[in-house]
Image (tube, rainbow, N blue to C red; front, side, top):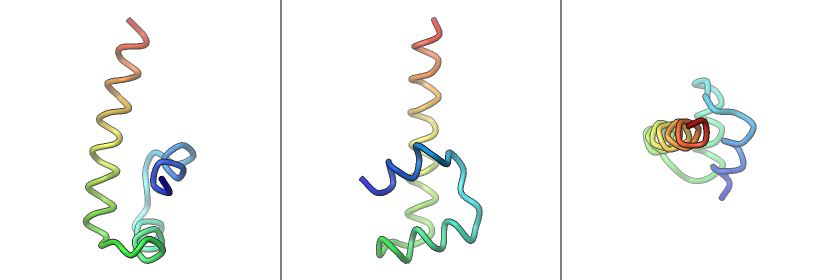
Length: 52
């Protein structure tokens, strides 16, 4: 849920932001990076479907 809220305001994370989010949630940087990559793909698909 925290990742979703952050994604609403920030579609891409810088390295310092990724470190901050990972530490705050008790996740690894790789987990946060992967979640963001997957979430962006899902978001792009939703935008494409909405625009057609």
